[in-house]
Length: 360
Image (cartoon, rainbow, N blue to C red; front, side, top):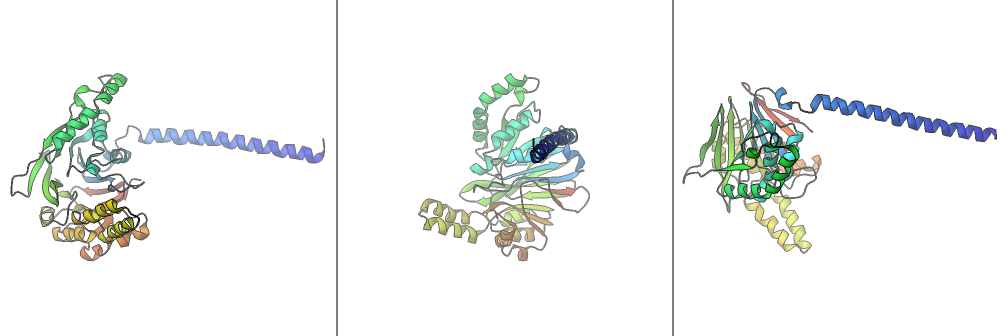
């Protein structure tokens, strides 16, 4: 065997040994990381570290437009030891759980209206509240007229899966009485703009009539707890009623549609021969609020912070965010942000701080 060949074989052996060592090291490191994650996060109530106050979880900041990074509209709210979910768009409940939302503390769901993009994740909410939250009674779901039909349909849709879950895990885990939801239909009296829908253990939730014609009724909600407050607009055009109801809130979560950008989308669709889709782009401009109108509402209400969600169209990059916002910063001088899935806004009890962070 020549010297060159010996050296070549030695180099090959060293390379193979290095690969085996690195693979072994990677496996060891992977095991360390995996079990470390188990020890620090699995089964841990991550909400316990938040402290007393109001905490908003943005579990869905998107719209019906496809977006790989944004789920359908959804806001989770933790008030002390009580948790609530407002709307449940597609994909939002998995985002909510990824954020560490305490499903075992959920008291009720609230629907702003019955457009599909706000309820197409409702079945998953009911399922996770039942199994993940270990519920023994169905989840109350508040909403406008028709909510009873939606809940009945969701319960029927998951009836087969219910049987599978019980067969898998037994009735001690998948408690049959906790399956599904119970509709709590809200009927605002004629001429009334708002009324209290939930008032228990220091948490008050007020339903607000908003403008989303031809969808009637459509609701926003205000949550008050220990001197802190969050108002959620739902889908609405500019509404003086909402501005009055949100007065003094610490945080306004408001939907937003940029009409110039949507009109440009419509023009391009028309150019491509997609006249039906172009018509939709035209129609939706009339029953949503622009960023400037949302900012006007925030200014008139005197809120501390405005976070825009249900973004149409959602800016795909930071570079485009100023284009989406338009003149909104001129309308409202307080804290103004565009929501992202995984964003959390915390309002500590007994203070005035508005803390915004991203869980992921």
